[in-house]
Image 1: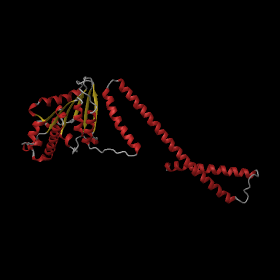
Image 2 (image 1 turned 180 degrees about the horizontal axis):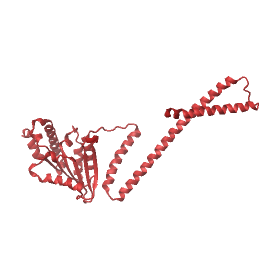
Image 3 (image 1 turned 45 degrees about the vertical axis):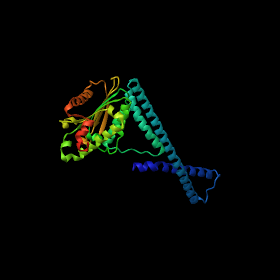
Image 4 (image 1 turned 180 degrees about the vertical axis):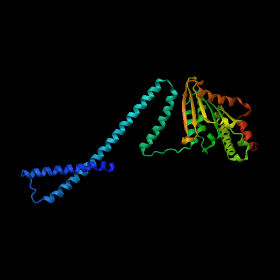
Length: 322
């Protein structure tokens, strides 16, 4: 009811105001003998209504256009204020002398700028990424901000590499570009041994075969592949080893002054949506960082269950080896 009232309030007031002005003007003219309304009562009355109605419509159109222009101006000013806030935040981060925070901001701003250009062109296409596709996008994008001598340590699982990943080699290409630029990559992929033993897990075994074959193919095609430290771990305690936040990544800069964690949260309990946390640590002794590093190093030391790409390929697909 209030909405209807607010919509008709201005036109109604305008109509009666115009009608009253015209009526008052003509009545005054008639009173002073300037205009004669004698014998024109009904005709003059309908004329007043018609003129008032036309004038009301014109005023309403102009008022609507003015309001729309005002909304656009307010929105424009609001966006400019937000840009000022962004600049303020960037200046604050610059004063912290942490180039990796600036790199993350640069990555996000470049991404959003491309979207803005598409919106301006009137053709904005958003990729609909699955959970694991989005994870690979986040990990890969952060990986591309690293420089020579930086270290990227990661524990991952089969799902990270194979789920919704048919024909998607972009993340692997990010890795190859990073090692070419001198980034040190240390990766262990944790595998549940039951995948190899149980006939009821043929789907996962086939996914694992495809993954290993893809890695072998990339290794043969690209000399940079061998610069990565890549191992498969047949975990004797996979339930524990595959617990969240696997897959995760730990990053150290070349000077060991900046430490970064990328931690997915894929637990959908209590209606929570999957998310990725990117956070900085003051040093590698900070509890969150050190505990994850310890998980990696513990697995790395278990050489009895750790396999290189070639050794794991030989174990996984012996029937295909001449």
